[in-house]
Length: 324
Image (tube, one colour):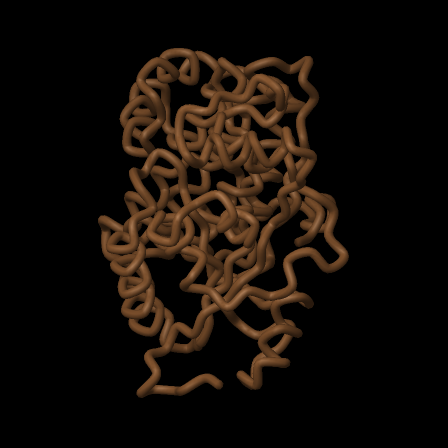
């Protein structure tokens, strides 16, 4: 990941749809209806002030440089809270300006239109996540949505798959397993989106099969032998609270887990944020309505900690290339 300052001068002026066209573009990206009018009004503030126009142009240019190249996304600057909605929604306009470029990239690679549409509509989902957490409009983690708008990440059914490279931890685990892979080799990184229904085994099976078909077909010059995942859902401690047939445990069973706890700090607020919608909720008052809520809250109230788990599984079918 590179800093925005390293991108140099922009190569072309960034543009936005006019105020009449913008609502349709926003709706295509699943932006919540209640946010449309305010975003249209913010458009002029992004373009008319020299400082915001300067930053807007450079962010757009940095995102489209090396478009589609894994691990080359720029580090987008965090904007100060005193900017209010102009700051929290600024990157919505950056992504809209990038939209024609990423759609053209999808077309060049033959990405099916429904995959392209659902992938980019994740922007609206993240705005819904922001509203659930903060009670206001905005994009919670712009650097995450940058992956969608750079052609690195794709929504395939229930799961998302990111064209990525193995890091040190997973690369070492795969090397130790005798796969012939190591740090820096290509992989598909699996992500689990919220607001998409249960994490059922059937839905996950379908997503994995879609990934096995899509990437060799549309990126034939790239070889992805493994899928990896880094998530609190892979913390083995969840098996202490959930039965073997639960969706989370069955999801864990897909993966060969690397050492979860070695050299890691606890990530207690991560499951709290995903399960309850706000990572800053006090532990003592967390609800106990579902098995997952009871698991997350009771474990913390008992003095335990949660960690991000790390796992992998072979993507190619065994007959194509067996793994040890």
